[in-house]
Length: 150
Image 1 (cartoon, one colour):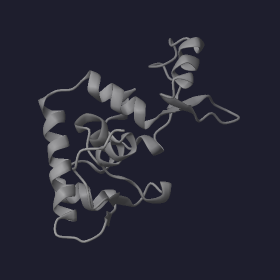
Image 2: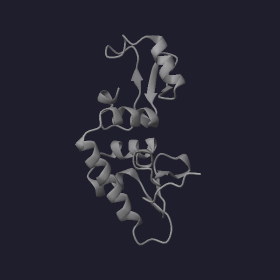
Image 3: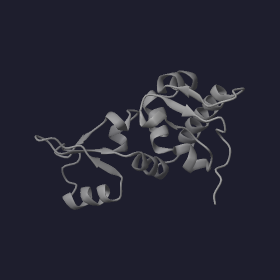
Image 4: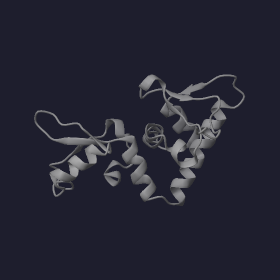
């Protein structure tokens, strides 16, 4: 699914299970992926389909991690740090702005936010969507600091 997703945003990409690429996947596998929170059912009355969750994108990305992925993540972190630098409060940006600053595809930036990739990969205070809306990103003032674990 990650291969077919490419640099598109998981929030707007749906996979039809009748597609030749996916039609050999057993219904029990789809159910297991859904039960584990890795896919969401996006079926309609006329077709069955699923979308990846942020957790699934992160897991798939980490299983295919390479130097390019590491560089992309570093560019993203540097771009976000640039936006929040010198501020006295949280900063806000849309995925297009961050993509423009970082040179990364907008979908990749959105997927990194959706999956909380920076938080998980670096155990740091990362970014999130503003009030759950997938169009505005909150870059907290304490971006990049280690997450406190109690």
